[in-house]
Image (cartoon, rainbow over all chains, first blue to last red):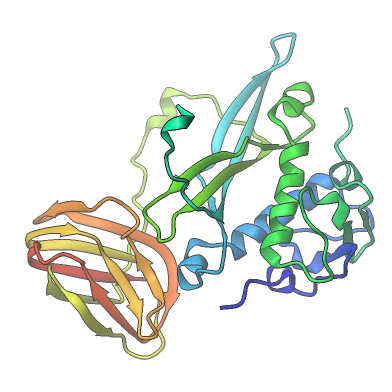
Length: 111
Length: 215
């Protein structure tokens, strides 16, 4: 099958030789305003990637070269220099990028 | 401290109320063309996040709520041809308030998750090879459970579309051994089709297995 296009990842997205335009409507759970915070946008991009680059999608189409798997939510604790504790939930998203690989013959002279 | 902006992560990027525009020069290692593939652009976005959201940035500033952990390379020789697999993990942090443990909180049992009956259950020989499974009409399942009813199952499991495309295949992993009464594997993924072909890749398996397609 043909490789996935930008618009298949982010519906309505477009590109030319210098830039990529992603509509905010393609970013899940993002409330679009004129100046979204950077991390809102990054989190939405990650969420969209996780929805598109599934293991099932790659199993059905070998031309897909990225798989994202969401892990279990974890609880983290941090302490500042005064010993004050903060608690966090962290959601891990593991990205696997598959790249063609040609094994090199083992050469005794390299050892 | 202040949160990083879009332009901090992707230099030159801009946004309006409806769209984000990112220059391709902000996507590391991407050779800009008029049409780059989706995978290329996605990888470029990821590499930009990897360069910016280092673990040390969050250690220095807890307002930073993303961390991307270093690439971990591995070679997957179970595939033909072999592939280099680069893995990275994006962590999204959000503030949490975890209630303190109290003795009173231990009252009552945690209710088990609701279970629904399988959509379809079939029984096949454990050494099945290429058996067609015809599912009634359009069919969507999210999990498959294999239970060894008698004998044992040694090998792999694969389920394929009539076109030859793979619905799933454990052939990339070491073979497993399961004996009677054991549930050997359960997948969690979505798939929809009406005709699938099952094989266990092993003539050594004996007995019968039950396959449950669960919604």
